[in-house]
Image (cartoon, rainbow, N blue to C red):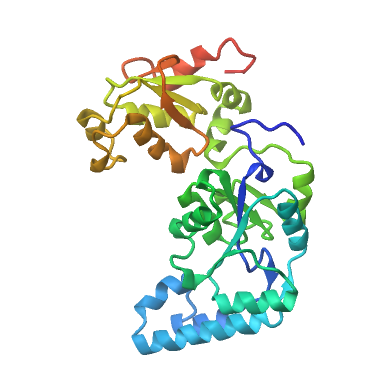
Length: 331
């Protein structure tokens, strides 16, 4: 395997995998155009979310019609090319995996039986609770797999898969949709599941979604150099959260705060992203929770040795520029 070091990434590094069903594993060729015409005047709406706006009797009929469409598609389902090989790789590498779908459970089981496909232990359908793009759907799957969201990857073929992953702080891979207008939500896109499987045998590093802006503006050399910096955050600085997020956006992966430090009122007043319930909590824990969704590779821990990052000093990019000027990076 090619050596890959954070913040560069490849799906093969993920400890657990969450897979969409239709379009990733099963090809059911569902056609909801007549359904949309019947219930939503042809509008491209999020069907499950819009059902609540229908009257109870109409909603009941719509749910049954939707189920019928899914079952009909399941009865003619075939495996997506490369899907069997993907599952074989996951099993070989002992990577736990789950299915998270907006389909009904009955249609998933029907399609799997027709395809001769063995479902995993964790299968979440729309009957399971929140559905994508609600991040709770993916957090529940990650929890069921026993793996933190930051160590998971979501593989899907539609925008709900990608937005759900972004909201949940989970890596996102788009497949089977070359040229999709929503591809910018993904960390990486493959034209097909087969291409994804092929990449697992010879992984090439990609720049994760959250670091694309800094690479565009400053280059990958800057990103790699900044990732080796340990940023010492100033607990006397009311702007500590802003400074940390700005430094994280520039590629810093490691932050330290003094042991026993807590979130003080002045930190909270200047940081609307924090909850009032965080007041008095260990600062390292609060800052880590802030980083988790946007910068899942970054970590905060207790310590005292590092490059001082503070609003009382130079802007973070200038501080980092000085800190990494010894390297070969073109900063």
